[in-house]
Length: 208
Image (cartoon, rainbow, N blue to C red; front, side, top):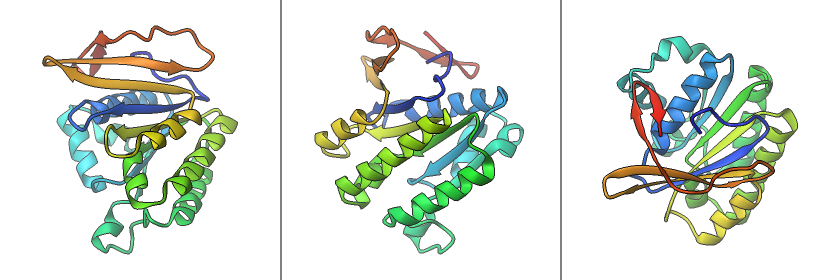
């Protein structure tokens, strides 16, 4: 995790709401873009200005990565803003995603779905799994990366199992006795240690 995510892999990043899913995602995005990559951020639970502010609060210079950080806003439509993309219309979301992928370029791209839980809340589970399965297939074909943030307990267990069946990796986060820890519970085709490890974040780095 500290070395980034392998290209051509789709990951579930799972944890309760009070864990560091978003913070770790920001660090991964920052490192990925600074290494020459691009990020397409699908946001469902807050406006894009909030994300920019959160990046700055972590001392991550938004201006330095903004050229290669692109947003698909699936939040604003909930408040009646017609400029946003309606999360309940998965066909529209898919069409806009594909248009943005083509415009941005699929090479060295990481797609972040923050959060997948909102897709399950606002749509039928079968339709969401089909939508996410297609996203995974596109990422695999282009050897890019898809990262699906999941709030534990926000959807049915069967939905989590279905999502994990179409992805290649699962990273779990938890806070236990005031210690942050994570583990890679699944990584198809690669050797990995699935034990829990403690970590902390200092100077914009993940330290184990």
